[in-house]
Length: 253
Image (cartoon, rainbow, N blue to C red; front, side, top):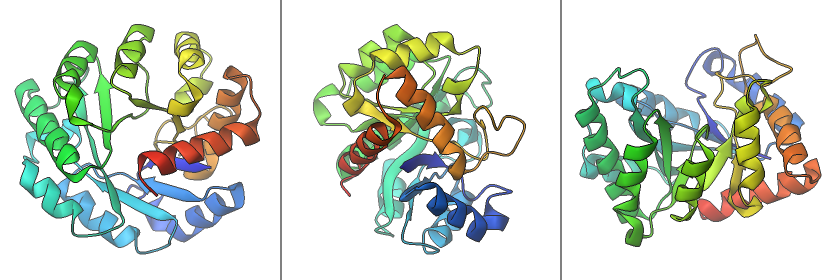
């Protein structure tokens, strides 16, 4: 198993990192991808990826943070090239649900991340909420640029998933698929090809059932894997192997 999206720089994970890593290994996790969201978080991530060979990181500015973290393509490229364990671009994208940041600022930041991703030939990790039309329009404008797309914590519509598949996108399932009220999302994941699926915790957020009410951590990913294997009518072991292979293929590991 691989947790394709966690925030090990966030508490309580950061202060208990050794224990979190040990529990991850005991669960059968072989890699953790810890995700950057701000300039400050990248400083922590550069330190965290040194803690264990299983930990890798990304560089990016979350759409909520674009109000105070303005970034350009060259800054992203330079930051990623600083460390061979920084293997992806993001978390970037568009969030028009909260609108913590100006829409134009979010869009400009998103495009800078996309262009850096293309130049570096590294996957881009995308957050999209209440912005399906705009997200797809922007991504499709780069269709012939061999962009490696990973839709993090995918909660979009069936129609959106089908459009994204025309761009060869990958989709990461989070603990949300275990929620009782996520029937529509569960049905969407039933239609996504196995070779395009990854799993994640987004920890310390979004703990899956039966761990709701607790701070999420990577070891809880087994519950998401179990639910997804049920939806895909395959074994936990088979889906674990498939999602692991998909991650390694996408991130060229």
